[in-house]
Length: 415
Image (cartoon, rainbow, N blue to C red; front, side, top):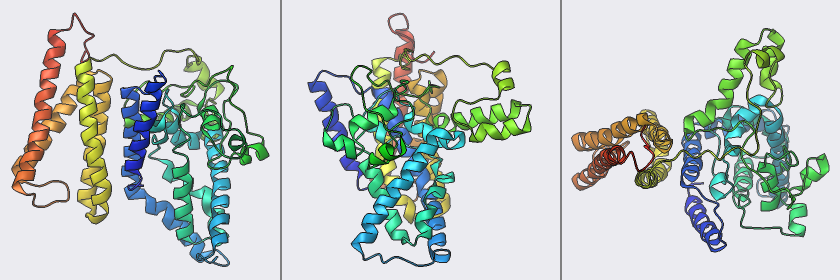
């Protein structure tokens, strides 16, 4: 996945250029930052959890499978990919039909845009239950290395279908998951809701009755029917869990307390819905996009660019680090994404959180001469890192001052 990251950004750049050439707005900086940040958060969590799912699979394949299929057979790999894609279909479908599974999957659907950054918008909690879906593959004797590779192939394939700049593809749309098919999957229109779950093949949807074709007379509208209304990546990962916990707590019936977790998304006990009503979903609601000044927006883009570089460094460095410094590095990156989310929302607390991050990082590197996992930095590198983060703190203070002095001419982003 780390090797694929440069390719992702090349294709994102191509998509952006094609969309501009066609006069279409498919990218919004705040939404793209949020989606990419959630992808980065998912990869950070994955460093500590990937072995959880693969380890469980390996144990079942080693101890409970009656045989082990040969990993040097091309038919094992082809059948393994087909079987994985079928199991993915059912996990994906249940992720839309069972609330506790939707709580993890919802992250991928929260964006009200549809572009290649949406593909990278992934959950940080899917490892908790997702592994269960693939146990049949383990029990049939598919080696762990086959499972790991076909899982990556299935995931990487799905990247390119998250775009609006590729139209209908004729016969391809009838067999494979394509941009047209997957646009329908992400839509909240009544016509499209909970359809087209296939990862690589769309024929699973045709077989099991969940296929719908994109209709030009009813263009897809993206997001969820309970809009996130936030750029906070941590909240994006826990919002549905928190809603379920509250409904379960308030439900009077013990059976309803359990049903909250296994019923379809949106289901609520009657007594809870009566006491704590929620507004009806309005498909024509305004896109969530708090107004901030151009200066602050540029600052957020630059800082997020630096965070992306640090995130790539983390993916490379973390497997070689001891647990404590790796965890400290991960917490630092998560905190940084959290602070940036508040800035994008134009909230005053974001300034203080970001000042703490940038000034604190500059001071720690300057004083200790070390970075996460690197005991002794070259003095010039330490000075450079400290200077970059010190400049970030100073720039943020200037931006905040500018915002306040020009509060009459621009919307105060920090109010």
